[in-house]
Length: 101
Image (cartoon, rainbow, N blue to C red):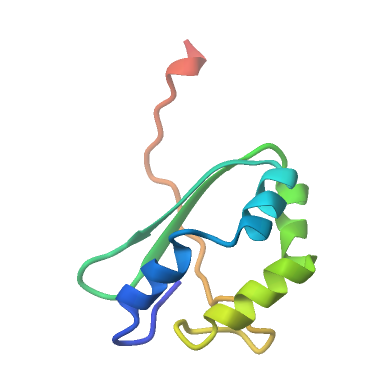
């Protein structure tokens, strides 16, 4: 995802704290941990989420609170016509997991 110029601080402010009702929807849809990182050189955001089920994760986008959040954040970010953040999937190039032993 990409922030518009000058909105780095506001983006962080709007996430701290996140709306309680949005946090609840995330947890109800199987999110166990969720982090967003800001690349220091280019306004690029990288989101990392651990989820229980991909279908449940994808269904968050259909909730009213998610749509309200997208609208709230749309002035700060590059968005699609439905106000969802424009995003590009990253390809994993390395992974290690101690649970596989």
